[in-house]
Image (tube, rainbow over all chains, first blue to last red):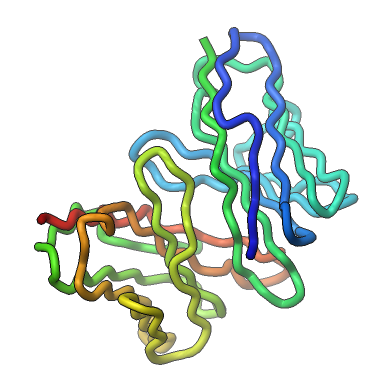
Length: 116
Length: 114
C-alpha cells in the first residue's frame, strides 16, 4: 500500500498563534512530499514541494516565512503556519511520492485549520 | 502557463449509466496522467493513472489518453450513487526538474441520481 497520515485532522486556534501539521508516510519512504491548500469549492493549490534534507521549494505567492516546511526524514514532513490569521483558515493536505521513477502522489487525509 | 482544464459541472447521470469525464492539458511534455476522486470534506483518492496512449481499464473505470490531442478522459460504467464526488484530473509538470509536481484541474462534480 501507500498510506499517508496527517496530524492533527482538525485544529482551531486563536489569531497570532502558530500551528504545526505533521505528514507521515507510513509504509514507504517518501523522497518528495507536497503541501497543498484547498479553500471551499476550489481545487487544490500547491504551496510547496519538500525533499528530505533540503529546503522546500515554494510556489509563487506562497510566503516561505509564514509557512515553514521541514522534511527531516524520508517519512516525515511538517508544515508550520506561523502567526496564523483568519484568512489562513483552510484545508491543508499533504501528499507523498515514492520516487523510484513514479510520479504518483498519495494524499494524507488533510488537516482542517480554523483560525478565530 | 501550464494548465489543466475540466468542465466543472455538475455532471448528473442516472444510476447505472456511464459517466464521462473529460480533461485537456496544455503542456505537450507531460508524461503522466492521473484521476483522483474527492468526496466533500475529504482529501483526494487515486482512482487511475495512465502513461501511454489508449485505454486503461480497472473495474468500472476506464481512463483514455490521447497525447496528440492533449486529452485524457475517465469513464465510469454502471455509475452508483457512491460515485458522486468531485473528480480531479492531474498531469505531471514537465520541463526541467519539477520533482514530480502535479498540475490539477479544477475538478468535475459528478452526481449520480438513484
